[in-house]
Image (tube, rainbow, N blue to C red; front, side, top):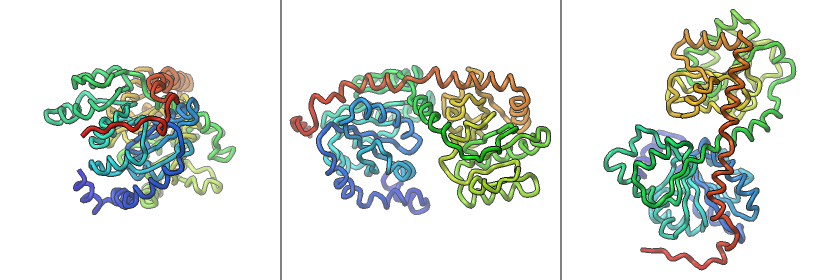
Amino acid sequence: MWVTFQLAGLINEKVRRGIRARANLFEELETKVRSLGAGKRVWVHSASMGEFEQGKAIIASIREQFPDLKVIVSFFSPSGYENSRNYPLADVVTYLPFDSQADAIRFLETIKPDLALFIRYDIWPNHLWELRKRQIPVFLVNATMKRMTVRRTPIVRDFHRSIYECLQEILTVSEHDAEMFKLFSLTQPRIMAVGDTRFDQVTVRSIDAKRKSLLPNGILEGRKVLVAGSCWDEDDHLLLPVFQRLSERIPETLLIHVPHEPTESHIAGLTDRLKGRTTWCLLSDINRYAGEQIIIVDSIGKLLPLYASAHVAYIGGSFGEGIHNVLEAAVFGVPVVFGPRHYNSQEPLHLIDYGGGFVVDDEESMERTIRNLIEDDSSRTAAGERAAAFVRNHTGTTDRLLSRLRPFLSPLSTHEQREPRKVSS
């Protein structure tokens, strides 16, 4: 894996950033840890930004209930680290070193955790094996396991079983996921379905988002707003022609288009496609807005508060590699529309069952579904209420998860007061 990572760095800038950033990892980490002082330490690891969002509700609850606790956050991906290096509820934010035995030993000797939490799926063998040698409890939280997964194939299954045996508990997002983990015939970890902390986190974030005003007063008055979030080219291929016809039929319709990657080149390509077809304005130039039919968001971090203004939401990725987050729109009571590739996530399926989510397979069904939701106020309102109920009925996971962690967070003994752990060979 290390060799593969180095080779990938030759052609991928994101991978190169991750390699360069780890050059002085331990020197920087030792400086950060030196100022921690006394108190128990919790290590929270996430692969990237998306997984870390699931961990924020956990960290916030831990800090609220155990204010003297020290929280160390690590990432594998540059996007996670770069966007979270100033996260206020963490005492230390760092990259995870490459997963060699020597690096794992040095990393754990440096941070000296009393408890380790791995978010979702990103677990690394050498770090887990070293945690087990030190008898440090490890929890896999918000855990998921697809029915058709490579982790259950021969040889790979035995390898993952040896890793999962290092865990204290596996806390899954659903009973289905718990049953999938039980197929590994694990003897050590307790497997429990407690729910998904993303529902708690998106609820908290939605409260803050409602206070933000990204659009000047008056732009949304009398408009029917369609917010298209995290869109890729595959989505735009259908969505843009659909919106052009929709705006001709319903002129008051406004599209707020949020690309998944709002780079200069992507925005330039998008605006070139719109020339001669419809009018558009960049969010960065919103003060010059003069009634354009499309507002293009050309920066990151704006999607959630924009969903609060939506009448209907389209979630991107669902005509490409896989759907993005549907909860960010549903929490505001907005009907959610998405394409056929949504099986990488359970939430769209449940949202369909609730009646707050709608699948479209092609350009025709997309136009029909969005048009019906925009024109039929009562149907749109009812669907939005069902979407909000779906989120509301699945909150409370953080409290259930904290009840499992609380015995290990008790300040009865601190890391400095405890006798050194014996490390087996």
